[in-house]
Structure formats: structure tokens, C-alpha cells
Amino acid sequence: MKNQYRLVFLLIPAITSFGSEHPIVADRPGFSTGTQTLKPNTVNVELGYQYAFNNHDTKLSSHTFPLMVLRTGLSEKAELDLLWDGLNVDKEEQPNVTSKADLSIGGKYKLYESAQYNFTALGILSLPTGTTPSTSDSTDPLVGILWDYAISDNNTLFGTLLASSSQIDHNRVYDTQFAIGTSINHTEIIGSFIEIYTVMPSEGSLHDIRVLDGGMTYLLNNDIQLDFNIGVGLTRYSSNFIGFGIASRF
Image (cartoon, rainbow, N blue to C red; front, side, top):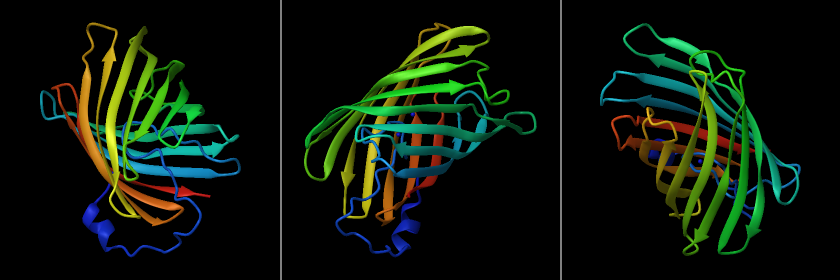
């Protein structure tokens, strides 16, 4: 469904093109997905890398890239999304295991839009195109509501309420996903966010995931955004992670 090295970004000179055109609005970084949809004939390419690890009860760690999201506007209210996490390189006690993630297709539709708050519907369908252990070997839906509320010109509350279904060991499992956070525009080109999210499966043998994450964004120009984020697992079954990425508008 919403990663960077701040000191590096601050040393990169901004390419000035901040005129009347609005800056790019990317869905990355972070767990939450933004409420905004792209205009028709506009395409966003969003890519990233993430390193995840868990120090609580396992030595499991993983590298995931390119975390690809392709977005294009269908109308003034709707967009089409194509998502693919890419390759997962998992390391446990044994040698690294490399696998391909499932491909997902879906989109967003604006339900309500105003200067202060927005509501958007999200629908995603994951297709069994990956390889073990990254594939569920089933078609898995996700639906939900995205929202945001402008506290001021530079500060916004946001959140998501999602429900999804996936297949684990030939059993259909349902879960609820909830996130809430805030974003701040520090300057015309630098922004930050912090959020907390949880994933609560219906299956009693599975454990809740709860993570606190945050990050920063840096606009090179109106069409290119760099980002960095970091997350801390709040339960022993929740992974820590760090990542970075780029989003470009065409």
C-alpha cells in the first residue's frame, strides 16, 4: 500500500523549477497511501530499496528492491496503479534465498475532496506471479479508505483503514490494517512524516504487526522527489527497516 539519507540530500543543490506547476505528489515513502490521484495523461514512476531485520527472536533479514509503483491518471478522480515489490533477498541461518514478489494491480478513486480534508477509496488485487517464499500462490484482494486533514498550510494528519485477504499454507486469512500519522512541509523542498501502523490478522496463530516509522522527502524539482525512511518494530514479531527511493513524474 505509503526512505532517505537527509545529510546527503541537503548537499544536493535543488534544480529550480518551482513555478506555477504543482510539485509531484508521490505515494512513497511510508506505509500509508496518499489520497491524491494523478491527472489524466500523467505518469508517476516510484522506485525504492528497503533493508529489513528483526533482532527479537530471529536473525532473519531481507533486502527488497525496486519496490516499483507505476501510477497513471484515468480521470480527474481516478487513477490506475501497478505495483511490484520486485526481488526479495532473505537471509536466515542458511544461504540467501532470492525470490520474486507477486504483481499487483488496482487504483484509487476520490470520494470527497476539499481544501481541508479528503477521502479516497483504494482497491488492489495481488496476482500469483511471484516465486516461493514471496508468493502467496493465490489472488489476494485489498480494499480500504484513505483520508487526510489539513491542520495548517504546512501540517497534515493522514491515515488509512484497510482490509485484505491472503492465502497462507492453503488457508484463507483476513486482516485489518490501520495507520495514522502526520506530515510537515518544513520548506518548499523538504518535508517529513511520522506514522504508526498495525496489521491485525484474523487467524489466532498469527501475530499482530505494529510499527512506528518516519522519514523525509526532498524535491530536486517539481517532477522528481527523493526520499528516506526508517521504521522500528514495536512488537517482537514486527521488523525494523530502513530504505530510500525516488519518484519521478512524466
